[in-house]
Amino acid sequence: MHPENIVLLGFMGTGKSAVGRMLAKRLGSDWHFIEMDKRIEELAGLSISEIFPQEGESHFRDLETQVCRELIGEHHAIVSTGGGVVTRPENVEILGSFAHLILLTATPEVIFERIIKDGKEKRPLLAKPDPMGEIEKLLAVREELYRAATGDYVDTTIKSPSEVAEEILALLRENGDVTC
Ligand code: S3P
Image: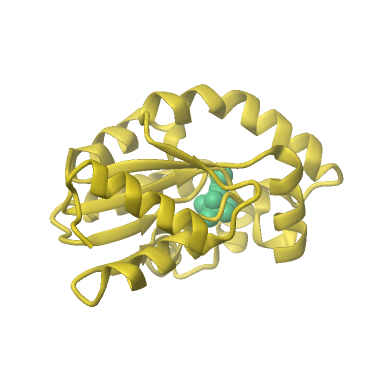
C-alpha cells in the first residue's frame, strides 16, 4: 500500500470529484486534490467535450496516460481519475505504483440520474440518444477492469459525498494510512 497518495477510480457519476474534494478537506492542509480531467484539459488546451470530437478518443487516452505518468512523485495527493482510466492496464499499474487505489461504485440508474443532472454534454461518451444504454454497455466492459484494479471499494449509491469520504477515511485508518 502507498499511504502517501490516494487515487479514486470509478465510472462517471460515482462521485470521485466531490468525494475527493471532501477527503482533501478532511485530511487537512497537508493534502491536496487533483482532478485528472482538468490536467488533461490544460495539456490539450481544449475542454474534455472538445477533445473527443476534435482529436478522437485515442488521443484523449494518450493524454490521460501522460497525466498518469506526470503524477508520479506526488506527495499527499488525492486524485480523481476519469472513468475510463482503467481501460489501459498501464495506467492502473502507474497509479498503483504511487497510491492507494479506491474504487467508487453506484447503480446504473443513479449514475444516469447524476449525469443528467450534471449535464450529459459534459460527458462526450454519453452525449448520445440513449445515454442509459451507453452507461450499461460501458459498465459491462469495464466492471471487471475496475474490480481487478483494487479490492478496496465504497458503494456511493445512497450516500452523500461526505458519508463516502468518512467511509474511505475509516478504511484508510484501518489500513494505518492515516491517523485522523
Ligand atoms: C470518461 C470519463 C470522464 C472523462 C471522459 C471519459 C470515461 O471523466 O475522463 O469524458 O471514459 O468514462 P469522469 O469519470 O470524471 O466523468
